[in-house]
Every structure is written in structure tokens, then in C-alpha cells.
Length: 181
Image (cartoon, rainbow, N blue to C red; front, side, top):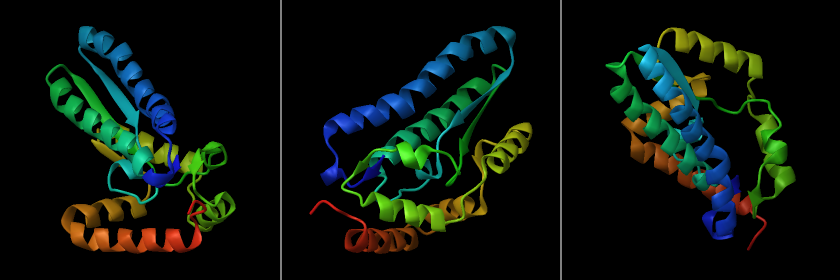
């Protein structure tokens, strides 16, 4: 889901929570007891780069992804002594039908899709191979692109620099991509 909060009805918040967060909770609880009884296992949750640093116009979507990152990292600490590994994959823009099926609130969809298609979009196979390789190394947070690792590093080590860039991005969005006024 993309759009500013002021353009997003509450029912869309519920949709994104149900589709992004609840399946992760269901999946973790379904396998955790089995892994605990077996004394080993590896849970790999899927979040997004939007779960590592705030992305303007994706705050609502990002809030579910931040929750997945937080749950995964917290569970990683709890589960380690039980022999269970936990990782969270945080891919960047991957070439999937997601952008064609997303909910857009007050967003100029053709402009948004053109914007995304101009970006370096990862092929699903490349993202998957990077997730598999990082899982084999038991990485806590799995980045699928250098751009995500860079954005996360800037946000962590210089929040004010990151926020300045994000403010510029929201200004450009409001000038060029917002349809609701």
C-alpha cells in the first residue's frame, strides 16, 4: 500500500495489517512448537527495506514491516537457546506483480509505476539466491541489495541526514505524484 496517511481510509490500514502482519504471526506460531520439540529449525520471515528505515508515502505499509523486523529480532534472541534460528529478509524493489496489485491512496498510479520501473528492480531469482546464501550464514537481517544496506546504514548512523533526504522525497512526491488535494 502506498499513500500518505491523510489520504488513507482506516479500512485500508486493516487490509495491510491482515495481509502483511497476520500471516507472519500465523506462520511463526505454526512452526515454532514443532521446532522447539525437535530442538532445531530456522524461521525466515519476509519484511521489506521499508521495515528497516522509514519510507515516505509507505508509512502504513512500512509499519507492518517494522513490526515483522522487530518480532523476528526479538524471537531470534528468545529462540537461540532452544536451537532455533530466526532471520528476516528485507528485500528492496523486486520485479513481482506487487506494484500492479497494490492499494494506492491519493497516488498518481501511472507516475508511481513509471518511477518504480526506472529504479533498479531486482529479479526474483537474484533476490532469492541472496536470501538463501544469507540464511546459510544465519544472518539476522538479510539484505538483497546494496541500496537497502546503504539506506539502512545511513538511517542508523546519521538519522538527520536520512531524514533530510526523506523530506526532499516527500516534497517531490507532493509536487509530482499526489492526486488527492
